[in-house]
Image 1: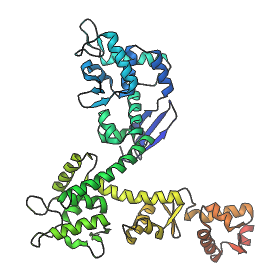
Image 2: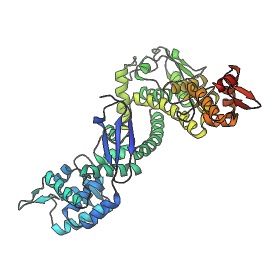
Image 3: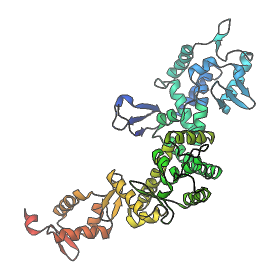
Image 4: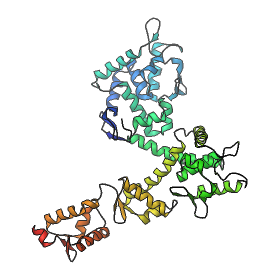
Length: 447
């Protein structure tokens, strides 16, 4: 099984969303059914007052599994405030489910220690298979033969992702952040939650750095988040590599520019460091000796968890730094159609000219951008360099000739860039030009 990115094909109501691992086997695909809310509303309305309605609502309005329903007692339900108290989490009770629970409790007259789904004279908990069977009979009766309790639970989590961030949905669903992201990767709801979480995390990281200051953890988080340094690079970093004059960090394989936040923090740490101490930037807090990357990672991880950022690690922060710059470039290309090297330098002014150029080259090498002349475009919006002449030739063979404007539209390029390409083709004798009218050479045209 090959690891890779997840991609999503999302259908309409009642259809499925298929998540496939890039380069992997279809057998590992996970299907998330998109529930027709109107159809479920009809089922709930027509089964009102029954145990089946409560089962469906627990799954759809609170994300409970059949096993959790089986173990649920009335003492685990708080009506004021409206909340379910499960062994591993607390779940807010939505109004439709709250109403249904009030009616059910009043109808059964059950005591606090009694199971919500009980059967027989001894009021033993209903088996989870029986719970599933009750739901299945009702759903089948209304033609929803492919919808399961798991699908209703998934839909609950997707609806929560529309309104909340990843950590919140992880808390109310009982899933880990990793499992939750893997389960719903690629969906529109997941993208929204990720964007919201990114905004929250940016501010949280700033607050953490402000709180930790020039401590080992504070410096490590700042260096990883703001300059993309990895664990081994952090542990080995010396003050000789911190070039305040050029505002950059000199690593063996690259230079990483320092933004204002990082530069100020490092200057303060350097002024506080006594001359006798080691040249290493990051030190073990108690001994003042160089710190290992493993020890550093554990310290940072512990601090991030205490700061409610339990999905982050040093590696994730470094990756976040690189992807943040890439995302800024890609967003610019989507808005403006293309980006030049100088525009990228202006866009990424905090990282410096050389690093901005490297970002463009790396995006082009990975196929995320297409380089034509001195500009970079999104794939699929322009004709690649190796296919340009064939496209131009085919067009001229069909139409006899064309002006630069037509050929620029054909290639998906700006007039100036297209003019440069056409000029080179004329110089090579592959095209002829007469007052901005381009044709194939006579002998080639006849052939």
